[in-house]
Image (tube, rainbow, N blue to C red):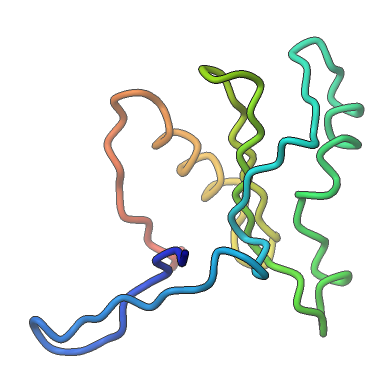
Amino acid sequence: MAWPLTTTRGGPNQKKPVFFPSSGWPVFGVRTDIELKRSMCYDDMVRVLQPVLCKTTDESVGTKEPLFRVTLVPESAERFALIISANHSIMDGHGFYKISAMLSDGAPVLRLNPVR
């Protein structure tokens, strides 16, 4: 299986999807080995989520570490946590909160302008 990543540039009707493999590229994933509890304090939550959090810019330079990750951590069949982690070199707090707001029930999905 492959996940759609983006589209190639081209004229009308010339855009083609570009895919990346769903295995071997740790950007999107489901982790059943992480146990989150609503009663956890922030420091404990960060410690437990460490395997799915993006590294700092200094730790990422020259590696193949992803600068953006989305991880689903199921709690039950109906309840889960969606963990979004981004390196500061590609997203600041403003962008993160814009994306978070779009994940709310009924919120419109907006195109973000990368230039500020």
